[in-house]
Image 1: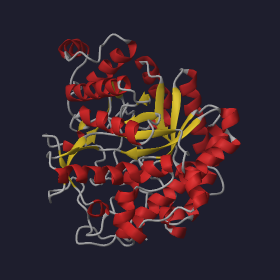
Image 2 (image 1 turned 45 degrees about the vertical axis):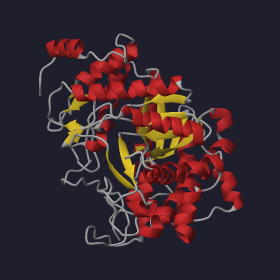
Image 3 (image 1 turned 120 degrees about the horizontal axis):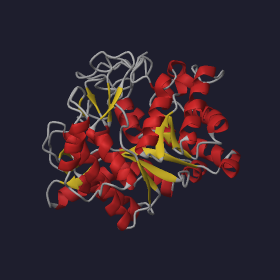
Length: 453
């Protein structure tokens, strides 16, 4: 059996055993947040660290760490926004029944969520059940990326899986597990704790490649698969018609009771967004090439190509795409409350502290969020990914997203502010106007007080 998420090995062989060492340095990191003026901090609770066997005894060290972190955030006036599941399935559950492709996961996930609500809920008012459920389902259970399942191909030697079926089974069980945890929270905890609970999805901006009718139809089909797959059940109780027609019996069916439970189970929608792509009906190179002839993107029947020009096209700053997503959600899904849970851009890790491209990226996207608010979107919050340099699951430590540089070769994991940290601090305290395109003066001031790596 292929291990699902135990060793945390990136493609370059590095691992996340210590990473930025937030376990020991959380107080220092919370102080950085407070000094910047952050009002909220998003982090994930590791199921494997809290309940190592998936069910049963709680790890006291894991429990104490999360309690201490939440207490530290609260003491500095920072709202914790907690994600319950971020890919780290306890290995025992993978070995026992295959994880998210088995309906047993619904009961186990709900029990895990119950522990978190009970232990942390008095101080946590914002809960996301599953991190970017869409990409988790199709990448890990269809494409076989990193630690998942897939049909074996000449590209990926998966030891188990069925890409044309398990993608949708896993996604279905995620929706049911989310709805189960949400129902538990609302029945058992909400009246006392007064929190909110939602689901997050990975959201590429989608735009037709040409003005042709075919490309417009392909874009609508892509929206049904990439947004509607999770959002339509959450808002309306069933899958998009485009998916039903295409997938037939491969798409699981909600019972009447399940439909009613899933519908309305999210108090908000979490959006994870980095860039925008073009969609065309004609064959073109995929950004996410399907590893099987019957994968998610083949089912979608639309070709996704880069809308940017840089070599890191997945993180090109194309802020109008985010505005398009938010407008689509407003028009098609009853304008749900929205949190942007991730938005950022990577740069080579050992580059200069003057990360001007990141400043320009964040500034542009905050501008897009403000425009969406002016146009009526029910936007509740925005989180930059990320505060500090982290271990990234596919690239390890070679590139990073942080506004603070972390020296991973230093046993003390020293943090150093980048230009983006100075800009974001100024934005939060009101001394920098997001509409201003002039970053030169800030860069000059930052250079006077810092040095390159």
